[in-house]
Image (cartoon, rainbow, N blue to C red; front, top):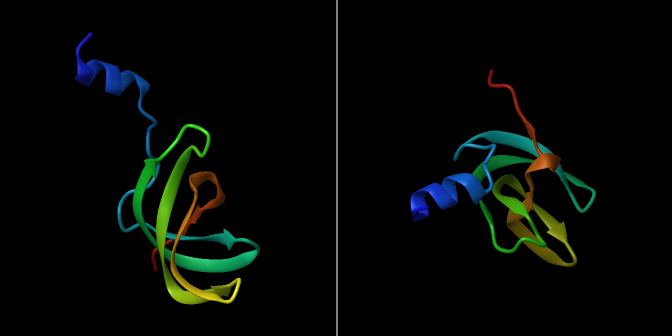
Length: 80
């Protein structure tokens, strides 16, 4: 088995495309944003999606513009 076959068989499959409009909750705070990259840093953490927020949120006395969340917590927004 070559590397291309190995990664095709064993890598996690993404469910979002760069630029998808999404909404969800981060630590209980609702948000709307645009997806960035989807990837996995570790098997314990699993597949995560970066989201660039439309409006920044304040969490633990920090202003946050980009978050990383699990893909199954996101909901795609319908385009208008």
